[in-house]
Image 1 (spheres, rainbow, N blue to C red):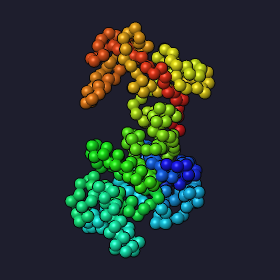
Image 2 (cartoon, rainbow, N blue to C red):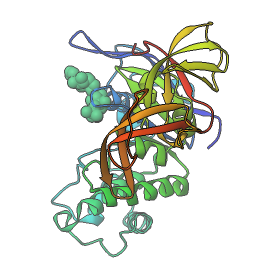
Image 3 (tube, rainbow, N blue to C red):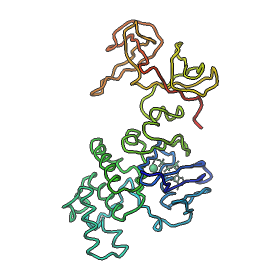
Image 4 (spheres, rainbow, N blue to C red):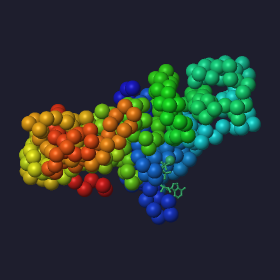
Length: 344
Ligand SMILES: Nc1ncnc2c1ncn2[C@@H]1O[C@H](COP(=O)(O)OP(=O)(O)OP(=O)(O)O)[C@@H](O)[C@H]1O
Ligand SMILES: [Mg+2]
């Protein structure tokens, strides 16, 4: 990854039938970066990709490529390729011909096509599958063909729209690591779209959290997780307990009737805030050490982990493994705080 910006979206507004879908979107994407647009269904992720690919023009605003305005430049003149969620492979062509398709359009000689397709199939782990028909390939294999078909054109930017959505969990996890490896190996920019936050955290250099056609936060996976800028991001990324509190002064917050040191500053004195406490910062301790007391309402077995749901601040007696009373301590001595009412 380096610092030069390859794609910039400037004050992008997209309206369909008078309805605002992207609302003043600003985004810089750096060269050779793995960027993920993350957000729930309908927030405008695919629309953003289509703007970059050139399948859609903004109602207002600009798309820049390496600083140059490319608004109005048709898709085939942009150094961009797209892997669609539904693969869009040609069912009547075999694996080799699917991958060779773009090269044939460019009228490359047969020898070069053969070499490039072979190399690319090797990169995606499909060596030896050249003559197979698409219908005889599994979902994961078809996905690899789709990726090879895009990468063989040597785009500077690869757009991937939820490419793993149709795969089962195990295969999806394998493909996540594989895509990350591919991006490093090919040394190009990947702009990836997903609504799966774990996928975004696993793969990306930078995550762009979107909601309602706006960017909520841009940052590394660590930033987004550890320092959510607002309650929406905190709630969307990872598991969070979000409770109302009061910021007494810098680094001191109180909620559920107890004061806690925290990492946050810059709020007004006694400002109402929403406090974000990650599960891993909560320790279950003996009554003497406890800062808060709560009640276990339910216990759910989830394989390796035991999930409990409970509420702090109630008095009762019981056993943590069953339903009843527990004492907790906020172990790292800090919580992240986000101001209230940030759902723009
Ligand atoms: N061509 C279109 N005409 C009218 N409305 C559209 C058009 N394309 C998208 N929309 C609307 O724009 C909004 C954003 O759509 P978009 O496809 O960008 O969402 P998304 O974030 O990709 O969602 P998903 O995760 O479900 O794919 C949706 O409300 C959608 O109905
Ligand atoms: Mg979409």
